[in-house]
Image (cartoon, rainbow, N blue to C red):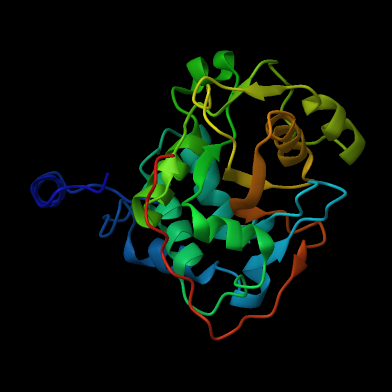
Length: 264
């Protein structure tokens, strides 16, 4: 739920009384916990429209879902993700998650002809964040993908299912692993969570912070598909700068509509 006028006013007053520092540097914060310079750098890290959107190959995810990435995992965007995950700055999830929501809804994206998007138009999709294992969640104190998904849903109006998936095996960090090792590391690591329960399967959006080889998305999608669920889109803050981008689609002039929110 979006913040009320009262809560926004209280936060603004707090910023004036206790001048907060930028989440990424020591300069005074001006907007959503960022100074003007860092805010501009994050905005500048957004990929051009035709490079943000793509489609994952059916060999990776059988439904060949749409793919949206804010930018490349490099520079200021990489720094922001590290600050969010490892330096105790969960407030950055609002900047990144809401930004992803606006990119999803922006006009000019090539989606109208895609079968998964037509499915999303018929019923507002549910958004499922990639989960952390309970041990890692206890250590970090929050799941960054869930925070990002919450703010994404604040903008899009879609329904967040924070426990749609569960991580049933505490896997090694993917960083530094080769592609084959990444796939083996997360194979069988996910299962349907209590959030999906006895719900009738439908189209969902998977949301995560980083997309590298696609191994995590593939493992999560396999678990959903086994339960009859269709991954219609994958949304991430950053994709690897060292790997080829998923197939892209040229922008069109058509503007996507914001589906009405439905809970079932």
